Amino acid sequence: MAVEEPKREPDQEKVAAIRVRREALYQAITGLEDALASPIGDANKWRLRVAMAVDHAVARIAEHIKQTEADGGLLDEVMADQPRLANRVVGMKADHEEMEKMVDALRLALAGVGDDDVADRADDIRKLAVELLGQLSRHRQRGSDLIYEAYQVDLGTHG
Image 1 (cartoon, rainbow, N blue to C red):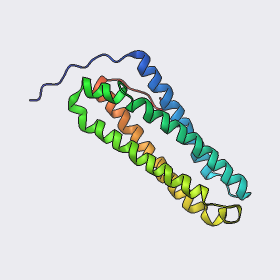
Image 2: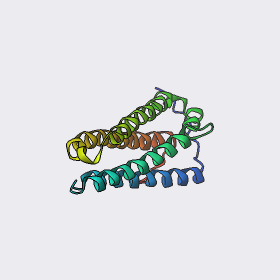
Image 3: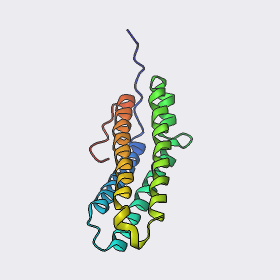
Image 4: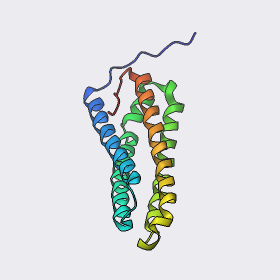
């Protein structure tokens, strides 16, 4: 039978900060979903709305990656406190790399769309964005599981 490593009590200020960042990311995700679901109608307005939502989501993703992968950040702490979770930490970092690639592809697609071809390219943009949203959702789920496994802390629905 495997011996479980003792769980260290997490720093409550860090947990609170994680919840705030997760909520901000959640709000950015829902903002992007709303922008994508809006009717094209005025093509330029739709493209600008989606671009603004993408920029907001990208900023939240970048902040998440910066904070969790920083020296002494959350992933370092989990590695130090719970070495048995090393593979899951590596998986979280791989998720970050994948999200960055997806963001780059989405931004490139948006940059290549002019007013005259928004309607023709909207499905492609929506597809790329929905793939990113799916990746973000799975990453948030894995992150919640990782924190719970390491510290028995439930981050809550949004946070």
